Length: 390
Image 1 (cartoon, one colour):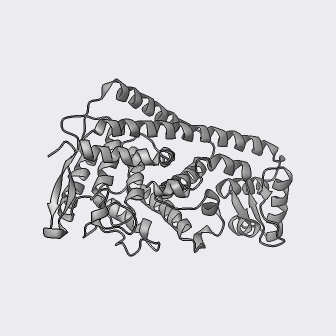
Image 2: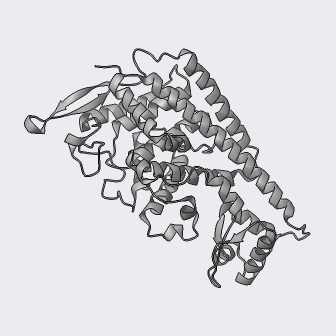
Image 3: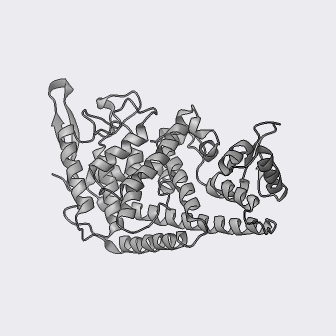
């Protein structure tokens, strides 16, 4: 067997194909850290620690977490070919949208929230991943792909409409898949001499190599990174959107994992992953600082009030959680009359905090534009050429 695994022959005759049986983690011979990897590890760890520190001292931590979860959901889904924008996901009608791409992202948000709650009850294991997969795939395009169940047939990665003969990569057969998942569970839950960030890199690679579901493996695998970082105590909340870097370097992302399978060179993959963590953590930290500064600047614009309940500030808090909103939706959520919410909305518009994005007399839509501009950096859908590179 090679360092990362071996090819296994399946079936016979013209139907013969070779699937990949991954070696158990950690790698053997052991990882060679080297100066470059050690430097990257220190830089990534420091960036992640700074992000975690920042996230604990910002006003309204829950607000930032909510927005970051949505951003990661969108970016991760875009890697899989989803063609929607942050505005689509934040649309007031998004939860009832018939758009399949929007539904995919919303399901990812639901799956993330479910996973974070479930992780407090059970360890990071196959059972948890299957439950997360069920939430992720429920009611969307992959519903016929056995949500919440490991596959019972062979899958492969290749061009759309192709067959096993056209595959770029064939994951382990069903028997080998179950053994590999059991090995991955042990690796994620037993003590390891490697740094947790390195273990996160290896765990993500291994999950993607096993490809245990008929669909949704990419999104579950990237969510696994976040869960592992939280489980190991490297971050306290889901404040990093790792898919930010992976989307920007999508071809290299897939190529580097394929290189591990081809040559057993885990080191080049780990270095790439550590750089992904470093860049994503730095970007998230900058976003937190910019969003915090914007919050303070606009809050200072609000007129002082001696009332125990300041409805204008209540609406301001609401739009930070719903940066695209309607008067009707805000009134319903805040327990205000329509006219009352309309008056407050007009005041925020006059202060230059929000702007109307429609030219309608009814069902007007407003946006907290400056807030959106910070959040949506890096979230433009992939172009046709980029999407085909998958």
